[in-house]
Image (tube, rainbow, N blue to C red; front, side):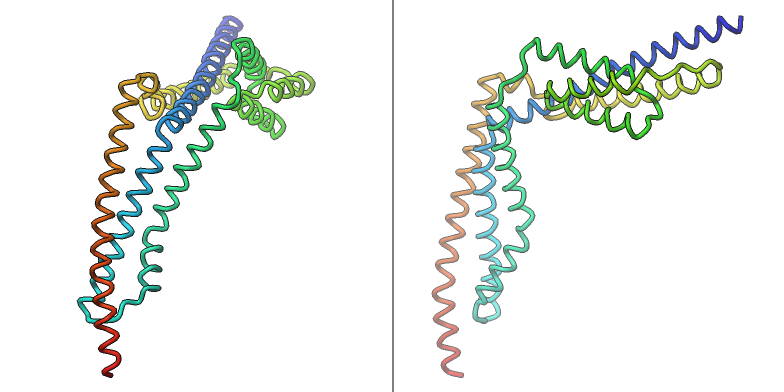
Length: 269
């Protein structure tokens, strides 16, 4: 009876480990698809987002500059242009960083889609290598296996078949499947650990599926959606440019008069 109980636990451990391996691969595949969707989103809308955000920042910059200049007017003081520029730049520094990020994401998307995607045969080969190495997975890996596993996952995420083949050669040469415990307590501990990991990755996978950018995958192939989004971005861009023009004219009206007034005041003193 004791032997039968141990064998049942071993089978259960084998099953939960296989299920975890499947969930882990599903997680990587979902993450990979999510990154693909994000690159596609940036390719379709990145340039328009960049122009819209640049117009928004220019609008905000002129608006803030106008506010600061008016504060000098209200105090009947000469405008310190360097101080105004410094204050505006400091206030908007993080937002200009966001503008650079939008451009960087767009450029990255362009490069991404210039690289040929893996063929079905290459995808099958990468999956087979993943499963071969994943079966060597251990709950408490040593430093060497941790390095192998990290390299494997990194190569899988990047669709780098050659790197995966190198990982497989490393795995075949230096690693074997971990030994299965022979006592019930150790088996139950490992089963519980895998069940915890299963719950963790089920949650992670649900979060990916229900969040941006994974959840807009179908929309990125919808021509009507694409047209509507581009129109909306163009309208917002135009609105910010019109506001910026108003702020610019307001600044032009303030600056010359104020400078003349201050120059005259200074001459009298």
